Image 1 (cartoon, one colour):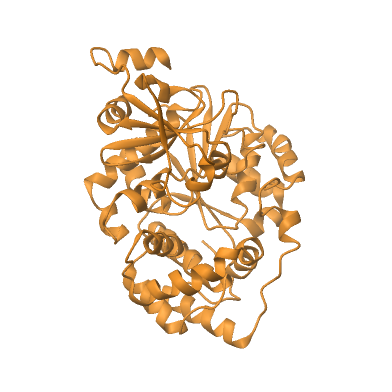
Image 2 (cartoon, rainbow, N blue to C red):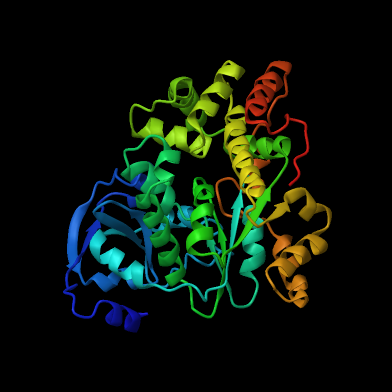
Length: 405
């Protein structure tokens, strides 16, 4: 990797180009809020190639500055079996922030060639077993997993003033952002490894760009029926202190108008709508007469993603559906179908099955043990009415329906 850097940057003065900052308090506590809320003190300047170290992770691509997180040497956050979700592991292990001029970052990213890299990208609805799929691929020889990077989300929500995400995704600015995002993460993975990339919120918008810029990337879609997905979401996050506060003071007020007044409102709005069409989201909110629980908020995330992916399918994009219910009903057959699509030898199915013997989210604050202690969703006629009103606007069935691609 160092040799690549020397060749790419030959003739450029990159000495002391990177600005390293640390926090005298707890860095991860500010990272949880938003990428621009750091309380940092300058540490030192460093050569630009510091960002090529394996313990340095891309965090946000800004207009003028690109931010990286540095963790302790020897900490491998791409070890998905130990760190199930990349962005959470970054928050927990961050030691300092590195600022690199965008011009230098773009020079490197533009020279990265990934045409020969074997990449499978899993887009998904939350709570559909996608973390389990990441661990299934993590046990395979010569496979690496990129499990939920928030770079695209952090860059889009906190660096660009356009409130309408769809408007931004149609621009050359966004296309360049996506290209750099994909190339840089790929650079971090050994060249002899295939890559299983598990996306997250907002990533669904990049599918047209992937087909244009990286047509060799194979697209997968993980999903689960709405009722069990929402129940799992409620058990995982509904009891968090911020859930009720966020719904009452941020989500509901901004959803009523679709006009975020500040960064927290924009963050909440974009997250729970996946950057979907604003008019549709407002119509769905008004049809439900408001929402009263995390369970109902989840309707927007799930419905927006399902609607987007169905449109892609209708437009002719080649996408392999991976339904959680199918995986649970027949592990071997479902994994075999995915492996066949990705040209993975069937003899590795037995090895992949070993990943299903453990809690794929073990060690996280919403692991199986913790979820079992949290209160469940309480079904009422009024709650079902609100949910179905939302789902009807998105034209994705009702709360008790089965979804099939």
